[in-house]
Length: 170
Length: 170
Image 1 (cartoon, rainbow over the protein chains, first blue to last red):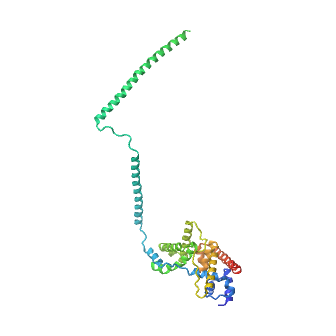
Image 2 (image 1 turned 180 degrees about the vertical axis):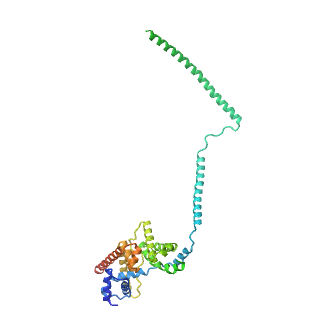
Image 3 (image 1 turned 45 degrees about the vertical axis):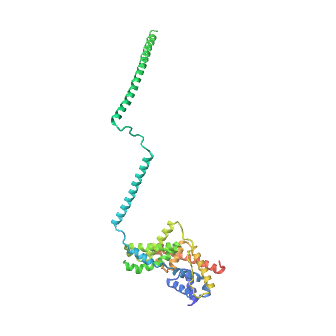
């Protein structure tokens, strides 16, 4: 291939004035091995481009993997809804079970403070009556004491009444 | 689009998609995963595939978007050179020449990594894959002017560095 022609093409290439066909001519020239001295400068670039172009997927099962994926039918709407509903139900079930166990744990750590002391209702009634009588006795005693305070109040009122009369006469 | 068309027309484009994903992600496994995802998405979105004029460009655009999504998710940028084994497939040269060529390829690889993201994408699509300017506009969702400016800047940056490398070995 005429190196002068390639030189001219290369100059056009650097200025982005080449067509795809001309660029292919350049690639072919540099790929054939023998490169003229003035063109040596650009040779590594074209070798690099050539190497890049030769890269490919080496995985032999790649095509089969893709084809298998394509043949898989996408999930229908009913299946999709069922699948999502099942997922949500499973989530709710987990929350309920966890809540139940947490409640059990809390109950176990706080024992009930009020517990029945009598199993026989008659006995319980008698005991309650006793307790209420005791309270009423206490109330009665208190009432007696308050009657004494009443006497004091009456005496005080009488004294105050006398004082007012004396002030009026003066 | 039937399965036969997909397997004979779309699936063979996997290597182009893979190279583009690899350019963006700089990771072979991730690039392969993206290609698989793209192909499945194209198959499941058959209705849209019939609307698009250039399905290959459409696949490339999906590849770009999915790769950039991955980069965003992992909050990284594929700025580093590709972690690849740049073997020179040259049977004719001496071991010394082969090593020298391999080193120059590594330099080009590092040089490519220094280019801005957009320029790297444009130069890859044009110089490695051989897409027309219109197709690149379609894939990268850029206007013609942006594509041409990016390619011009990328090629000139490479040219300047190659000249420097040749003159001073830097």
